Length: 276
Image (cartoon, rainbow, N blue to C red; front, side, top):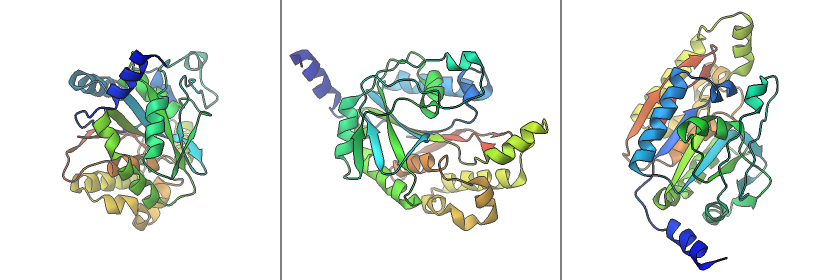
C-alpha cells in the first residue's frame, strides 16, 4: 500500500461530527426508478445530509440480507444485486456503482465479537434502491451488515449500541426495511386494484409513531405485546429489525425526526425517520 493511500485511510478514521442515522421504509423495489413523493423526500433528505457533512462511508442494515450469524461485507467492489423477479427490464438495468469499504467494514467487525467479516455479498435492493435517491452520485463507499434471523429482537437493539462509535468516524448508518410489511395481504389489495390501508396496518403504524415520539424504544423491541395487530403487521421480522438498529444507535434525548409516512398497498408502512 502506498503512503498516500495509508494516510487517507488513517485520516478517515479521525473523529468527526456525530453523523445522523436513518431508517428508510423502502417499500416496492420499483421505487428505485419512480419519481414519487417518497423518492423526492429521499432526494431532499440526502441532499441536506451531504450539504452539512459528507459521510466517509455508508453502512446499511437491509431487510434483504438474512443470515445465521452476523456478517459485515468487506468486498471492495460490491455488485448491484437484483434480488427479485417479475420486474421490467429497465429495473434490472439499474446499477449502483459505489465502491465498498473494507477498512470500515473491518473496523465494524472489531466493535463486537458477534460480527464476522465476509466478502460474499454486494448491495441488495434494500440498499441500492434507496441510495440511488439519497446519494445519486454513488461517490461514497457503501458496505452492509447482515441480520441474524435467528436472534431475538433485543439482540439487534443491543448490537446497534456497540456500533455507535462509527457515527463519530463519519459513517452514515441506515436501516432499510418497513415497520409494517404484510406482503401477502398487500398483494390481495393489488389484485383487487385497491390501495386502501388495512385498519390493523394503520393502527400499528400509528402506535409505532407514538413510541418513536415518546422514545419508548423498549416497547418497539417488545412489539409482540401488541397482539393480533402486531402479528398482522409483522408476520416475519426481516423488515422490522432494521428499525431496531436505527433506534439502538440513538443517543439519550437525541432528536428523532419522522419525515415521511404512508401506507402503501394497504399493508406496507413507508414511515421514515432520522436520528440526529
